[in-house]
Image (cartoon, rainbow over all chains, first blue to last red; front, side, top):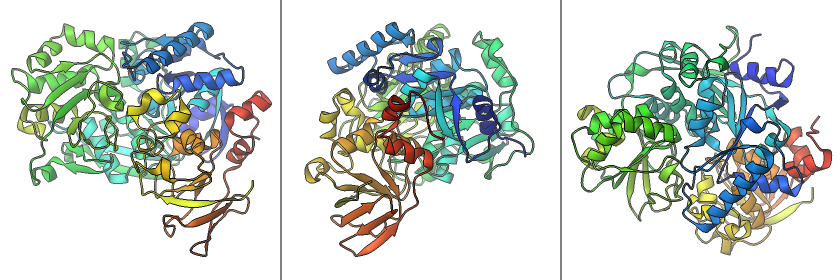
Length: 420
Length: 167
């Protein structure tokens, strides 16, 4: 019997052919921690006198969640991570460099890698066909130190995509639709694998958005095959050597096959307070208008250059609604610079947007845009849980960069097809 | 393991790690006893003051979804909760709980109400609801996780053996 992508990669990393359901000890290629989870990881290693890393050049500590630090406690946490990097040779990604899930795929991951990170959206790396998954601080601390961790090999859901995206509909709408369909726990403990002609034609930025949200359906990993798109992306990032093609065996065994015709999709929004609480724009139009106090474009889900360009194309020559704040956080310094160079930033500033430093921005509720009591936010991030953006009395809606830009223009949740 | 006895505090479906350890308290992550005073604050603002040591947190489906923050199960444990019972758990929270030595039990929690007296026998795989006079059975943990929990969590396991010793 053939193997799924997850089975293939975990077989390579455990030295034997494994099937779904088995427990394995697997070697780990790339590790990340961030400033919310790294300090605990470091302290755990200190407790058992194991302050070392197995692969220093592929262990990266990110200062991205509270960057720059808004409080002395967090500044001290940053100092702890800087000291650990100096001591062990691990790489430090400084305040302003960007979000872990942007930097890791572009600079570190190779197809077929095993990648663990103390951040749930580590699954973003599945876009490059890496077995990439989030874990807690202690798990990642041990993986950093020993270069190994344990896994239960997951069963796989095959997501078969067909059709072309209609105008105004993006990969974000697709992944929200999928989560709405199967539920926030619809794929718990499972791997997702994306296939079909739609996938063959999907650029890396779109794949990263979809892989990023695998965990929002409960999944361990969201994998794309390594193909021409992967090769082109790695070449563009100056790492063409890292490429190798990987696909599942033709007779691989899937627990479930889910087919989606993307040509039938509409712009989709997740309503408060769970990601699977989705509505299509047709449904939204039948409701009373929903005023939005704050729009956020950015995060590890949708803070890439292409996302900012889509927003700029909608906002060009226009101004945001005067009662709707518009915050934009590029996912990395490189993206900020590219947006500066191609005029995207100018367009956004002309529309009265506020540009935040590269990083996680207001998504985690630490700083840079906490909601007031009863306030509403439409954001391109991946989560809308109670309290997510700093206030349990806030209401968070999730959508694509196009939906976010259209909403910033009108001040209410707006179908981007109306303003394109 | 010894039998655990305490009162049930009942929460609904989809309790996220943001409910348990909110992002706005990010700065307390390096002061876990202080963070524990806010445990589950965004699901029930008074929970930390109402509960007693040994009590149980009882959830519905998909308990612990969201962020990988290990601080979430850690502060539930520091607060004195003896175990979390739910119909299902999110993957990272489940694994983190075992790693920090917090028992997590997958069972049918439908019949459990606030303040029910529960007795949990992990070895026998049964929850006795002493108030309702009912028994709820549950499947044992996978062997790997049993071993980690017995060793007092992942850190102690690695400290003891110098490596994974899960076979």
